[in-house]
Image 1 (tube, one colour):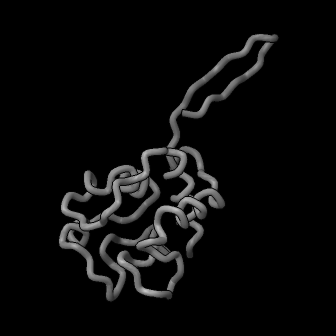
Image 2 (spheres, rainbow, N blue to C red):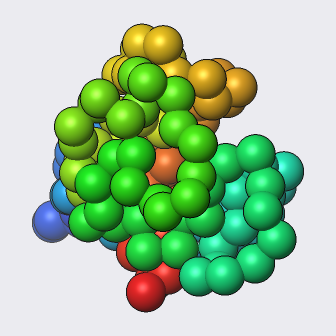
Length: 127
């Protein structure tokens, strides 16, 4: 949770607020670092490149699930019928198996909201 502290007449007022990618953008440079640390074992961030366990995440924001040509998706992912918006990615990255039961992606999720916001902001730069 982020905190906003305002000073007025010598008194501090503290406001706490939660945020997600729709409310506050993450840091794309930090998102790229997290992507490299967490995602590159299975995914690439380029349009073309070496085949990995997961599909390329280049251009994922706005793309329908299960739609990368030539990639073999699980039935659950093919039938998920979602578009990867920042809000959907936020939910998915928090707990992939809860959002798409039956997915074969072996990833437990990112528990820190700030890391999710950073990665989503980074993914939005991949066009």
